[in-house]
Length: 183
Image (cartoon, rainbow, N blue to C red; front, side, top):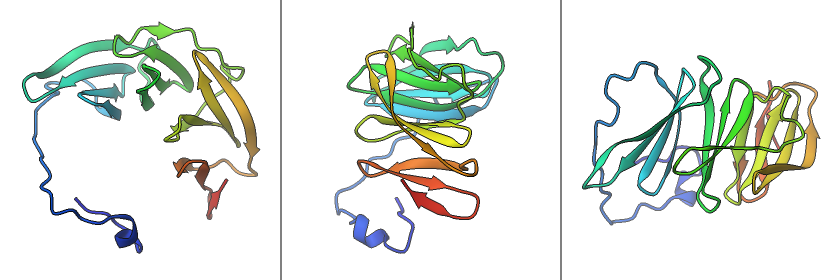
């Protein structure tokens, strides 16, 4: 286990407790590569480059494919995945649109979102379940309320952000063409 960066020692203190690592060959003869991944307790969910979700059960006693779902977006990659443990749902980004599903059965839920028909290029979820959703030159700060994504704030940029991730409880680190910004 390695933590990189100039201040890594401030953020990470190596414990003397052993780290148990075990390897399992989960995916055999996968026809399309894995494009995204997330996990929850004893399950791993994979998004493939052809628009499928693969849900695997992973325990020391039993492991293997539990469920496979075609998102119905054609042969488009699943760009992002996020499991909401407390809400028992999963959010996926495929073909520039969001899909909300129940977890672990992966049944599609009717997602309500005022920008649903706009091109969504990225999303990121904070540790407190705030959602940042990128729409071209803006990032919407939202929250999931049941099956509705409620926009709380729209942050505009002069250029299209290259990417963003949450940093702590309420800050976004946004990568712009020539620099990084905190929002």
